[in-house]
Length: 139
Image (tube, rainbow, N blue to C red; front, side):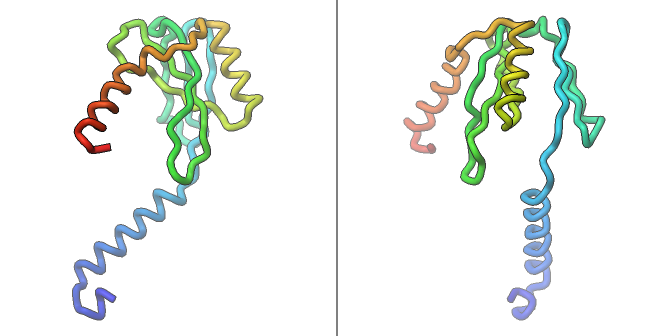
């Protein structure tokens, strides 16, 4: 339609945006291998070795299991929140696999090295920000 009107620049921008959205929405999900030992959590990308991380366990005081916010097309999913020793730092989230057996195995492995706490206090900052956004009328 834009080409018929003679606006080639707008047609090129629209085509580029369409291709970009398709690549983002159709791309395959990343696969991760998580290993836990006494000293650290190692997260390795199976499809990209440059996406590896090491998180020392001595930085965290406990962990809890939380529900991840889901989008319109996503199924609800759970995650492990590693709560840091420094209370002003945000928790580190590790998304659990959708398979319940694998998720339970990971939770059991974490409980071998960190205490489980059904904590909600770390979410106080999030709740304050949500209330403030509602007060401003932007949410």
